[in-house]
Length: 438
Image (cartoon, rainbow, N blue to C red):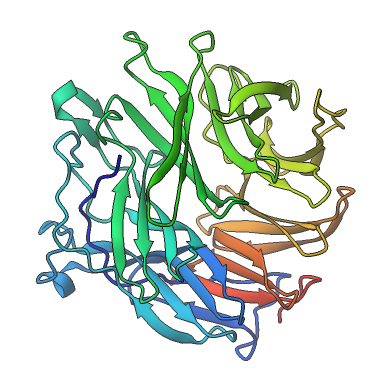
């Protein structure tokens, strides 16, 4: 079931990044800044076959600039936020900004967003077979209410509400779809969405879920999986929950050529990998990655899973005492392969993976955020081989956005340092394969 969610998307993403090695980058190198005068944030990155680039995120602009747009507007706000995309050539030069002019889509009656004004952003970008793009977006920290069911979810900084925007090849939105409050879905709250292209050309979206209708005395944690085509039509949808567990939730997934849906997440206090296959993705195999130590809380720390060409998987996650780890594992028809010990790639306290991708030679790029007591945000970019050996580790100024390997073997990094020590902006930077400024 589809539904259109009201929003207005104005200007476009933005970007400010700073590379490391304690040296300030030279101005003639590939370091590009995009966006408006006020704050902005870049969090999605895609490269075209010809080397051109599309980035997405959010841009904050003075609200008075948009009083006549019919958009999301709060007269008490000085700043208004808009999700958007921006086209670049292969050298990072801006071609065009693409505002998303959605003016009058009504919000469905089952759901209400009391404070939606300035908190939307694009998280992921996927191309579609018709030349357009699917944008997985989120409202961050908003309050959500289901008036008909007397349910209310107060927002905080970590709460996210996902929605989907389909752009045509002219970057005009064809539809906007929400995943909370749709008919039949209004008893649950979906968050922490992850979108990936599937081998058959369709698109998969995984959600973490609170199932409030099943547990009157509290929320049962679970997950939902949605498969849809480029027109937004639902091909498969299923909620997964198990009332034997206080917490059973998934964070990331892959689907291989055989149709196996492999996910990683949390089951009570442990991290796990779970495999589902068959027409309804019935659960058949389960493996715990390590002893866990998650406690009894729902773990919101990011986790990632990627598949190599030989069918092996790598999982990247954070585990107490909040160090970043990766673990390789394999699957067989009848059982899980032997699980090697996790590899601790960093013992910095409070370091979390924010983006993971596999290179053409099957190295692993891991971009982390390091939460320090300093006011300046920072992260680290790692390149790690199939044996778990670190090839380089680079400190990056700013909050992480995204990282991918370019078609020429270089590395594109999206990051969001502070401008004048106060306002975040986003930079796109290109690095050589060995981590040097390009």
